[in-house]
Length: 481
Image 1 (cartoon, rainbow, N blue to C red):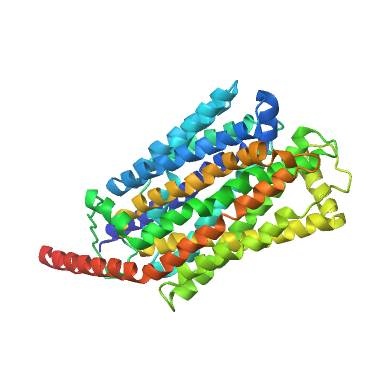
Image 2: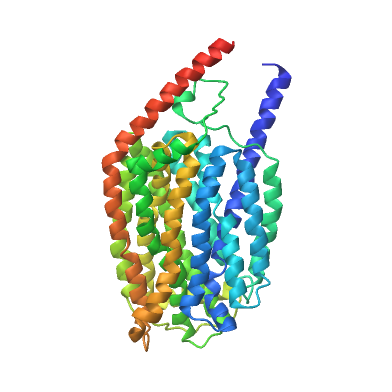
């Protein structure tokens, strides 16, 4: 290769690395947007005079619309250059997230958040496809763990950004404006070569992987048995996260509101404690991702086995945690200064044994239950062809978001219409709602057991197809020389 050729190749690699950085920033902003409203539920209720069911419906509709469009964005990304799909979808969610700031009534808020969901659905299928082409199969679990941490961190950023304002609108400007900027930057960057990370193609220097999804490919996605079980489990597996993400901060906010502090202060407290719970899932994602790659080298179904253990393992700890009663025992300052609130919470934990036990059990349970994410992503890549992965992830996350999206509404429905007799004086309706949500992990685990029985055969099928294609590409390159 000439000196100029080497410089050009190096510049392309630099552009590819820059694309990854910008992509992860867009991912962070995307997931931050999805978490902005949840810590401010109580403020939205006060302003618009709406019930728990109605405020939960906002998040539910946004999530369901996002899930419905994941199939479109995933299929589109499998057909064309993925950066164009990412650009158009990111512009859409940035526009309507910006418009959310101007909502003057409940119906406008509902409409703007639903339209935001159209664009929010892009990240998971497109990101999954890009990462699968960057990282070799042997390292995918840990990489998807980092990906999961980034997603969780994005959600955590949303919680944190929501605390920067005492009202609920301004945080949407703080996320949507950078979304515009980085969407346009992303459009001019280079994406990774499709299928480059597959071990079957490692000896092919000039890889022109021209295979793209078609109607036959759509049928293959569903007839793949492991796909089928891992897709269906997502409905049951994501309901607990949807319920806890929406109503655990609300539960803590209520408990601290009894001290007489203002709505702005107890909303911030709910956001902090809810964010810590979700941080546990991010840690678990990393731990299970690390061991997922280790066990994959010993047994090819190891990632699915770890996912099964993760799903069942978190249930008892979190279920016990949400049923332990507690009351605030220290004086909470009526200040919106985040540092002052954190100091007050540390003091409360040191003086409140029940709250400390609740947090410890819930945090450890979240670590275990959150471990499923990285191994699920890697196992999905293992059993699908490169040109099917965006579509598969779109379909999978559509089912996931049905579960995750139903969570807030389902929780609000239980609070208002099922457990309403337990509402006063102790608000046991919130404890029972969280418990019912957690128990959905049990049927989820049974579908993982079914996937454990089929994953070896589906992985071998993918390997055989890629081996055949690699042979054809080598022969084609030799003939062209």
